[in-house]
Amino acid sequence: MQAGLQVSGQRLSPKLSSVTPSSVSRAHVSRNRRLTQEHTPLHPAELRQTASLKATLVEEALAAREELVQDKSTAEKFSWTKAWYPMQSIKDMDPKKPEAVKLFGKELVLWRDGNGTWRALEDLCPHRLVPLSEGRIEESNGTLMCSFHGWTFDGEGNCVNIPQCGNVDPAAEKAACSNKRSRVASFPTQEKQGLLWVWGESGPTAFIEAFATPVKANPLVEKWPEGQYSYLFDNYVRDVPGTIDVWIDNMTDQSHAIFAHNGAIGPPSKDLLSKGGLRGQPATVGKEPGDGIRYQWGRGDDKGSPISTGNFVYTPPTFNGLPSGGTPEDAPRSLWIYTTPMGANSTRLIINFARRTDQAPAFKPKWQDALKKKLFGFIVNSRWMGHLNLHNVDDGDQVLLHKQSSNYRYMKDSWQKATYSPATTDRGSLGFRKWWESFGGHGPEYLDTETAIPDPRPATDPNRRRDLLDRYAQHTHMCTACSGALKNVRLLQQVGKYAAIAAAAVLVIALGRGQQIVSPITAALTAFTAAVLYARKRLHKLEQRFVFTDWRHAEIA
Image (cartoon, rainbow, N blue to C red; front, side, top):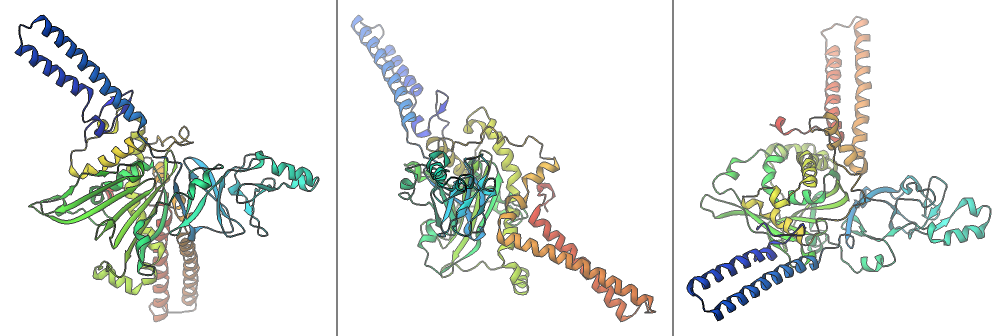
């Protein structure tokens, strides 16, 4: 990728900067020098012609520069607010409780009304500016009640009840509810592929624009026949530190996986980096802002012949697809990740992996894994166990990308100048950054830009690492599968505790009544107590996997 041209502090796209005014001027000067050398001494008339040529060339160079500036300033940009964003897995939402979320730094509340429709309002009661997400849903009519003074709102944000007025003067209540100042901003919503999607804008035209715009969900799932595909990971949601661009950039670069995810997806493969290694193809940037990019990489042999290929597709604003086993249009397997911009320093990841059961056979596990699956299938195949495994993958990135996001925020040069990308596997990142600058306008505008300051504490600070890798706050508390499993794990620990105490008490009583120390009864009680204590220890370790695990790369074997 060419570095581009700086104009008024802005970087022009490589396409526009491939022929710059400076290069035009150098060509013109060189041409003029040749003319002067070939016609020395010049006739006065020729001198006038040369001077006229110089003036013409200067005008052409200035016109070229002006055209480049105009092209840059008038280039169509992607509208981040006029798009759909996945906010939450519907199976993890409680229809009886409101849920707080964020989009572009704006606080929203999600809830289901009396008609069974999921709604999104600004999380702000107009009465005293308290969060509506702390309220409750009225069972009688499905309206959302503010817990501070009981003001109640319907799905469109209209205030329908003010107890302080209605109980005294119904006419005054009607007038107050009709006043636009009592309304709450409402955002369009719809369900798609098991997710609740929210439109990025509110207002009178938002609903018209929203339902005229398709949701950019995984197109492969739309094509796959119903009942002929299965999920390995199903809408795993995690709130991670860092801006969406570093997470999207991270997905384009699959060469990082064998290092950042060492221990989570297997050890680094020396063979992968030797001989043919990984090779990236030039990324394709779409012609329209909404086209995004496509990128392909491959693993080659020592002669450069391809062994396997991988694909990456980014469709703005949130879809990141990694289809495998075919082209992006007909692949039988797909990993896809949505990146929802929660705030200026936070991103919501929603991860899925599915395959067509009629075309893509399941990966054959090692015999040890196959045995575990046969004996403990109810655990191995559980949704929560899949989420715990994904935590390990995410943890390998989080501290790195959090700091990367902070460094990018304060870098003085452009991304191309501040970073160095010499490998072919960098081409995906280069392609995304080209789209990000040319069409993306460097990302959406956030309401919390000033307050969402990256954590200044060093990575060695244990409290900072706990915040960055807090699995409970980032995932468990809002996942029904994981929160339920955590509750059961803690319950089993308590049961084990009392069982061990009871066994120890029985053993003491038996010994006190003359039971021999070496006997079948004492041996059985001792073994039972030891087994229970060991099980509690294992359960405690499992509990920590739902809450916090300090992932340090230097300590991963």
